[in-house]
Image 1: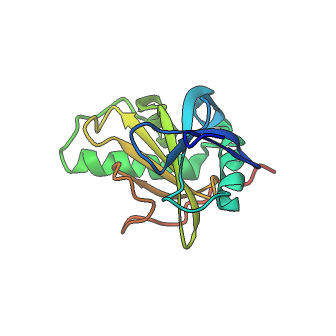
Image 2: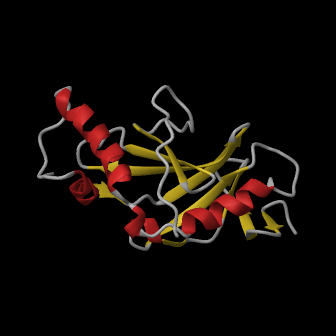
Length: 172
């Protein structure tokens, strides 16, 4: 296997991202949480030795198992609160959002999802564009691919002062 491609037992074949040496990309695939939008999943191995941390092999399938129906009231309320914060600060005009779940009509699927890790686990950083904050967008952070822990402006970090446990409901 070349330095540009590697195989992981859990994730399969990954290709090195040409712009960031520590990023490895899976082939584009549908993301059910965003109604099947095609995304590239990117693993940031931070230059660690291979094989990849087993947490990546668990977080990726966990994210891919989240259907759009899992955008429940708690998740919608967290994203709506982010919108309301921008609205209250006068940074955006009111949008036709009459209930928290309407906020998803103004959130656009990402082109890629970045997976990274820290001492707490593996995180999926989903950076979306949104109608109320076109410059900085919306970042959803899911620990282990399924536990929503942060809704914020996109900053590329899994943790921050606004992080909380906003767990998505179980699939059961």
